[in-house]
Amino acid sequence: MTGEPRSIGVIGAGSWGTALARLLARKGHRVGLWAREPEVAVEIRDHRENRTFFPGFELPDGLEASSNLSDVVSGRDMLVSVVPSQFVSSVFDGIREELGPETQVVSASKGIEVATGRSMDEVFLEFMTPAQAHRLTFLSGPSFASEVAVEAPTAVVAASRSNQAATAAQAAFQTDFFRVYTNQDVLGVELGGALKNVIALAAGVVAGMGFGHNTLAALLTRGLAEITRLGVAMGADPATFSGLAGMGDLVLTCTGSLTRNRTVGYRIGKGESLEEILTGMKSVAEGVRTVQAVRALARKFDVEMPISKEVHALLWEGRTTEEAMRNLMLRGPKPEVWS
Image (cartoon, rainbow, N blue to C red; front, side, top):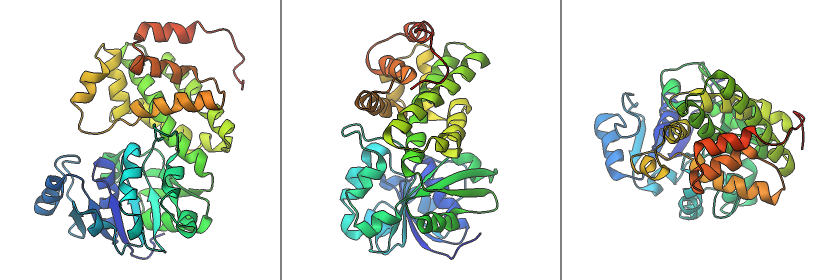
């Protein structure tokens, strides 16, 4: 499936935004890439490389970078949002008048807005007409930017309420190494992509504390269970969490050494403070803020999420790693499946 060449704007020039822009441009689409930092846009134009956030990968001449958001948004028939979730609202509030009536927005932003508890779907709908909202699509799944750049076989999912919109995104992105499946469970795909970052923080802590495969396997399995419990309580399809946006992304983020969230957790497990870790990071670890929203949602929907609760306590309440582990292991006995 190749799809017709399209005019596509990618909003966000971090590693994942650059990787997606590169994929789309190499496929023959006309691609504009917005970098918040002017020096990054200059770097890409002058050196055909994003040396700040995605070094080592040549960017095609057909990819045009700009720090002027209007240049990247105006006149496009598809926009891909790769903005960190906590900034989606402010970015799209500034461009709502520039979204064309036929523009399809594809969100690759994973997270929950902490201040409001809103999903990215709910955030985007604030800035869209009903027709634009109907075409809104979410791209998620296990996909390291650097592995996509070297064309390692990768599979992701495009979710939309409109099967036509999901299919259009599938056609725009799919290549012989980047396989895109469609799904209509927008909420489930969004929650899987956001909540796995919280469990990835826990996976990093486990590794940092020196625990091995037994502990990690238990963490992933029970982590997926609590993600699914919350998702079902909110109205998502439980089957979604067994798919690419659920189990697939969870396994990648919790076991891969390239993930920001696992790295933050690992350093916490080694005894560093969250403040000193974040001070030295250029990129955003979404789970650090997402866990605050997850705790609020768990309370709102009366869902028990013990791993997320302990991660929140580690990051924001001063709990030690030893206390968190003891709290999880000494909880009262339960059946494996419970609500």
